[in-house]
Length: 275
Image 1 (cartoon, rainbow, N blue to C red):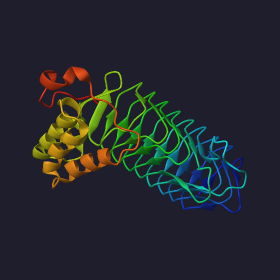
Image 2: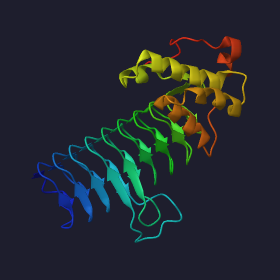
Image 3: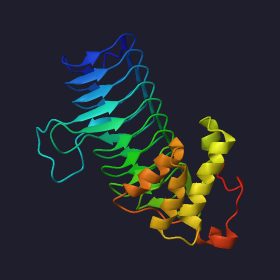
Image 4: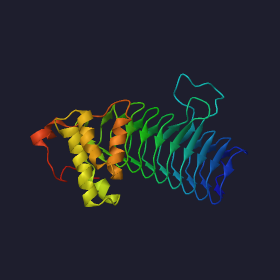
């Protein structure tokens, strides 16, 4: 271990092998830091936080702090869990839940860029990238492989599905299904083609995903009838996941861009957002 002499570390903290902790960082009680992790200067890791191996947490980050919630009572034991090989950049803030035994969870291989805020009860899946200044309010769920650009604002309890892509400055007030790309003034406007390719999803399955997105967002059908058509391909796992996500939504689904509806919708893979 390489621990700077100015770091303040609780004797109850559990520090793994080859961990580096920089100047003036604070590690509170009931904290676990996995092997080969790097904690930069002026970082605070608050109580009841577990950090997996090979993580990097940069200058000024605040991980596992008490929530910004009027319901929180001092002494409540709730948790923050960070997965393996996750990177938390400068001044990121992550808060634990206000109620006993609940968890805020950040997955494996996640990148949270500078000034990202993850509020209480947030759940971020594996391989997610979130760019600078994006804010996730309470109970937001981000599916595996999703990419969020900078300055995105997400309303509490919203869900973003796996492999979705969100453009910069978006304001998210409802759910975004898996594989969708949202930009253009907060509209869904097609599949996240690049993300699908990077995930190894072949052209036939990409075509079915594109068809499902077109049917749901850009046909003249209502949601119920659109899902009936989509479910004809429910044997394909991605199509089943897309349909189930919509059926289980409690906040509703963000709208599709009306300029792509009906005859105006493009039926090719050129509708995409480069990332």
